[in-house]
Image 1 (cartoon, rainbow, N blue to C red):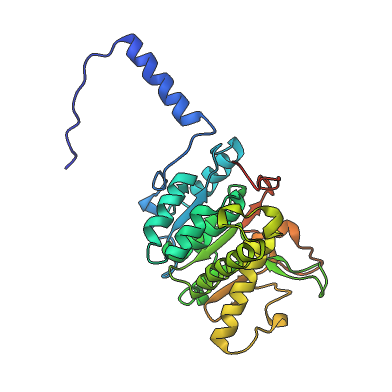
Image 2 (image 1 turned 180 degrees about the horizontal axis):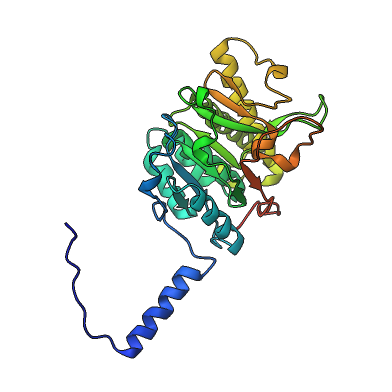
Length: 314
């Protein structure tokens, strides 16, 4: 039974105009901020099309800075949700990110203290993606990511769906030569809650923070980009790659054989980590000749909003 809706019979012309203006501003203003639970386009009619991963929740995580969503980011987000109506987007701001970490990592006061004290926005945003995925699972998308035509529910091969607990894709793999250091991209990551590989990444970041504060004799809040060095290495793709491969090595009690997971034309499952070929998440960063490749699952538009002396929006 539908709840009875109260009837309102009298609105002044002025009231209608004011309400219409407020709606227009709140809905169309490109810099608007959303709360973590506010962006859902779920369509129950799609439930029977493809069973979702039994381990990875149908949640998409985003983080906006003080300026909110740009027009392009809003369009890319809308496009992803339109193509994946079973997924729900959760958009974090600086404030809601702080609140989330305090609430969900109270058992790790070292993490809470370090996260809240970080003053460089990109370091904090990188850290948040791993913390969110470890706790909640789902998918992390940077704001400059748009989705291809393959639904997210079909990204994991059917034979690997039951086991895959972390899905990463090569950023640099084919076309870079064998001596080029490979790394996973970090603008699109899928994970089941509680991934031990992400916990390794989190703990590695904590170790790196401690090392830098001791080296420079400053509190966490005093760390600068000059002190931490390359963002790619400190919290970004290199950190993710190193942590995941180190964790897999511990599981297997041996170093991961790089030739077995590189130059990929098909997905490879190592333990519970699914590694996608470069064309999946980073098609523009890899060069293929006559090789047969699959479709690009996402497109990264390389907005690079964090590439400034402040390391992002302040």
